[in-house]
Image (cartoon, rainbow, N blue to C red; front, side, top):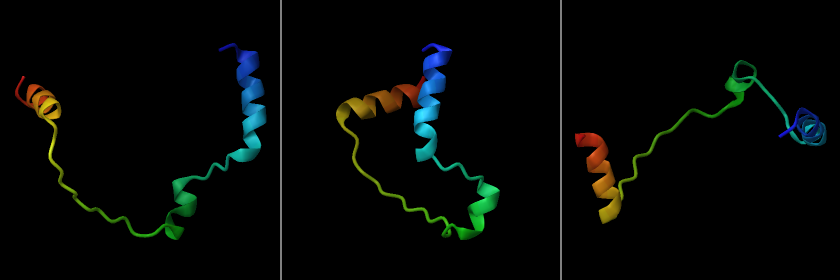
Length: 55
């Protein structure tokens, strides 16, 4: 993508983005919650998982 096209894209999209830093909004965020949801893997997923873990 050329620099000119990229600049045009940024110009068009700029009004639709709101950039905020975590340090500025973290007090307004809810507490983080974690929930473990277990589900069965397909045969293919299990094979790939085992390949990564054991090799």
